[in-house]
Length: 178
Image (tube, rainbow, N blue to C red; front, side, top):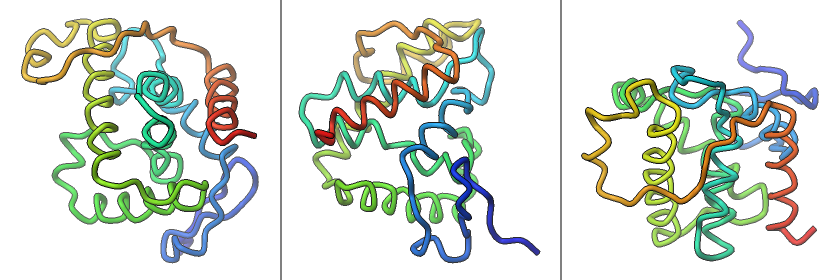
């Protein structure tokens, strides 16, 4: 049975040997531009790539900006599993953490420290509140107040996949000083 997938750039991503994989920003940007937030249950297609760009723009410093941009990089290889289901899948969460740490490490920033990850978590929750209020039919009315952070100050534009991919790569290059 096949234990790998072919990425957008034509590389093989091997699930049994994730440390040997080559992680490319073009693969991550392309795949995340195709994935829709909220498991696709939005009023318009809103990509994980756009979500990540908005988060990176809201973060206060370079390490947290880069960590925010790449924080869902593992989803480019593993797919997006909605959080309530992910919480029921401990083996998936283990693999996700392993792959995510490798994304951070191999794309030039190293695994973020606890302080940076706290900023990423806060930005992610703030983005969630902002996105829910714009993109869900219910605007998250039954649960949004339970999130104890301020929404981030941005408007989800619902870029198409091509623009989301381009914006993601441009933001990465900007943050890496390339």
